[in-house]
Image (cartoon, rainbow, N blue to C red):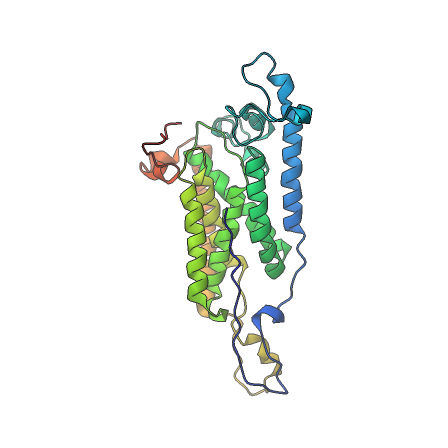
Length: 321
């Protein structure tokens, strides 16, 4: 997954001995990142536990094909024909909490909507997500703190699981990609809602949109759960309007202004409009999604073309399974 590092710009202003220069990058508190490294450690630790439980040598005895990297003993990987990502079997993933529609709806195992976020299909899968999380998440946490970034990550992952379960009902799904797309979505809404404090804003917007578009385009390949990506992205995008507001440019200087000077409001009116609209959409969306899911209905019943968002058939592959 690609990631972007969009630098916020600063504006030049005249020197004034009574009013210190205000720069967006330095005036706000810079947080020490710890929750993103913790998420990285948890994802890796869970994968190790899953491989321990998988125990390929024991489960493949007498079965055609052999484990990969046998020197790892019980941590060795399933045959590549079964799992080309160097990971466990689908049975092990399902046992450990993979998202599976029937178990969520009819087995009353709603916890799978959360547990699947911490599981990965293989070494390639977990490394891709962990590296993306480091590049995207640490910068966000340094700017906005662990509480807001942690909420966006977890809620976006949950939102991705809901949309995935609504549309994918015959296969299991695992991975933190929904949560990662939520962070990308939050980066986009943060840029939009804090538009006035950015320099080179058009270039920043264009770069971020291209990054997001490329990552979503990869999701139309077979065996990639793009519904989790889309659900996570939408959740994070809306959460960004709610949680990542910044004061408008120049607000911090108000404390140094004369008593009779006109004082700027902390936020602009459009920021509050975005916040209110996003909050309403989040509540309505999650409520409708959960109600529809636990009623056992499929999203495809209401959207006959939505399956193309997850996989587009070509002469090289099919999308039936």
